[in-house]
Amino acid sequence: MQFGKTLVGAVIGAALGIGLLVAVYLLFGIDKMWMAIPVAVLTGLGVRMVVATSGHASYLRGAITVLLAMGAYLGGLAITKAVANHRSQTVTKPVAPQAAANEPGEPGDAKGEEPAAAAPPVTAPPITPANPDLRRSAAPPPINTWDFLSLAIAALVAYELGRGTGGVSKETINAAPVEPVPGGAHPDA
Image (cartoon, rainbow, N blue to C red; front, side, top):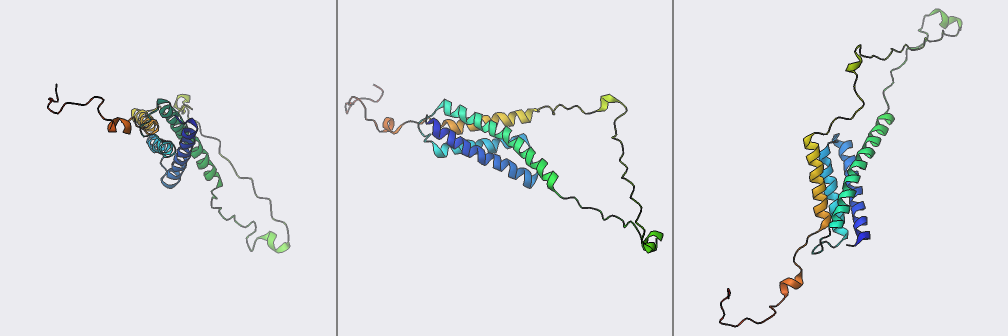
């Protein structure tokens, strides 16, 4: 099964998939569940590039690929969320110029008196709905059918790419018949 090569290929493909998730989110703002499919494809292709899968199908290799692909997608969502939060905190907001404390012609300007301290900004209390039942719940939105199908398709794609093909080996194709067939014999006989 080539366990070590399977893990290396799956990890490389998963890292590329996570990079794709972050890039697509930053460039296009897409964070849908169907993005699990490209992550699964990259993870499966990573396994295919490192391991010789032709003629050597392995159910365990397929299962490992699925687990790493789904883990990469879910971990990639967490990384994307962290990158988006960090980016929103580091973006500088334009600062409105503050009005000068003393306008020319005010009494404090000519006499050299210190300007009066500015009043602290007034903050409004948080708005809460009158009816407590209208508050949003902290529960995540439910998974709809299309999200579930996207994850299922991604798992199937990762499994098939990671498992490999169980094609006919070259030895079977080139094998000669075991006993010779008489020249005048009917093929069905």
